[in-house]
Image 1 (cartoon, rainbow, N blue to C red):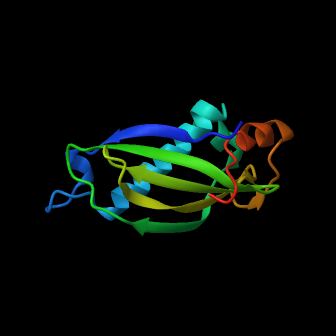
Image 2 (spheres, rainbow, N blue to C red):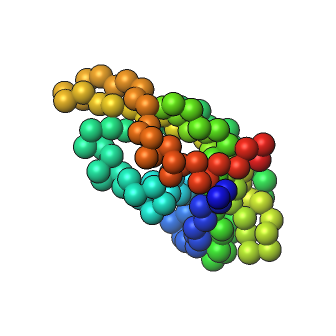
Length: 143
């Protein structure tokens, strides 16, 4: 069952610059929110629990800004899996306006890491088989 994780995002005053368009770092915050929501809602692994012993840092990010998004618009944020490794997952994402035009698209690679008790060391740690099964539901290769 290959699916896309989808969430709406209303563009608010806090997202825009003086020109009234989304300031590019806000798009990256929206992407992080999408990843966090995916882990909590679809993978049953909320960041509040993950970060007790693990982390999911972004290790690679490719972004293309295609079209300005403006205050008051409603975007649809989409995320899917391109490739699942032992401890990493490469996801595609796209933010579309209400007419279906792409505002932002790209890829993000996340790595599951274990964190030592003193938080002085982190190390890649394979996903559990249960987690791989959940993540695989979003696998859309060659997307």
